[in-house]
Image (cartoon, rainbow, N blue to C red; front, side, top):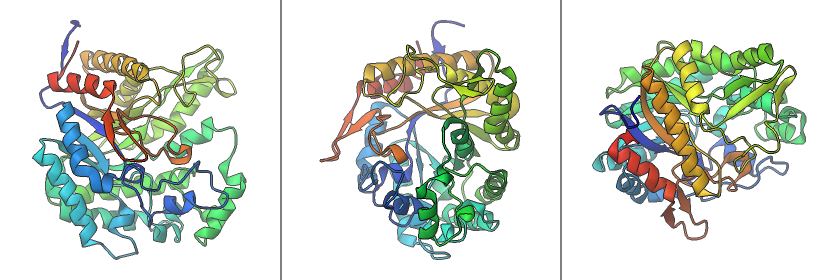
Amino acid sequence: MTQEFIFPKEFLWGAATSAHQVEGNNINSECWLLEHLPETIYAEPSGDACDHYHRYPEDIALLAELGFNSYRFSIEWARIEPEEGEFSYAELEHYRRMLATCHAHNIKPMVTFHHFTTPRWLMRRGGWLDEKTPEYFARYCKRATEHLGDLISAACTFNEPNLAMILSKLLPFKIQEGPFWNIAAQAFDVSPDRLGLFQLVAEPRMRDIILDAHRRAFEVLHAGPGDFPVGLTLALIDVQAAEGGENKALEYRREMSDIYLEQVRKDDFIGVQTYSRMLVGPNGAVSPGKHVEKNQTGEEFYPKAIGGTIRLAAEIAGIPIIVTENGLASTDDTQRVRYFQRALHSVVEAMGDGIDVRGYYCWSAFDNFEWVSGYTPKFGIITVDRETQRRTPKPSAYWLGKIAQANRYY
């Protein structure tokens, strides 16, 4: 491979966000309620977030100015269908304006239809443990696509439906056994075993329900207006065996990744989302060690993990790949630039070996709300002043934007 690598002409360069993490005041979602429970596991509420709901015109313009040609964001089901069967024309028009703004700046919008958050009314029915949920999700996707499809450039049905399985391997405790779980179940008037929280329940029956919903949505999205590729995204960790952990590593990888990758072989693409690796010993996940460089949240600084997961997705799914999330939680932006440099080198190596990679999106566009961790982790290439909402691009934004504008790695 030459030192300089030129990407395909239509390669997608972008940054990613999700509605709940940046829009603010998503009061009809289950997450908003969970953030405000007396025994909440959330460090703080999302509140105004980045006020992206109102500031999207300047935000999209800034991404274009930096050099990106795509933007991955999610539309919020809880806004579009705040009560069962009641669809908001006003909210659909809001997202249509967002899509139009993208096109006005020559930004190709990749739309995620479900990025972790769910309407409260669905949670009262059992959420992602209810067998009718695929039907409700397909109905929402149909209505949204009828209104928005002609402006969508690519679509993800779900974001990381395998995350709960990964957390079950990483966390040293079970969230269901703490006081939060029972209080949350009471808040939605369901029994604890019927609390179908998308991010937190690692059960095969939930996996089957979500994959059924994905398949139905895939058909609906292709049947509506517009002509765009459809896939889903997976949280893929580069699973590696520590001494004596070869069999356990294969077991973990299968449960966290392989089963899902086998189910998307007929999709148009698979979204790969990777941040680090997991070392697995004979008894499970092991610490990488005290002297290993780490990110802000204590994970190993291991940029080349993305190369390993791209190769895994190519081997098992056998369909085009888009890196829909890749990034670093750090208050040191020089560390983030080093991460991007090494991660992109791994992407380039995979492409040089003939793997069909069609895009790269960093996570995230902004320092935003990071779920249970609140606003402490800094993943953004653009900082957001929490008091004034002022946006300031970091050096990493300019570095990655320059690569995107040149469409070459050197």
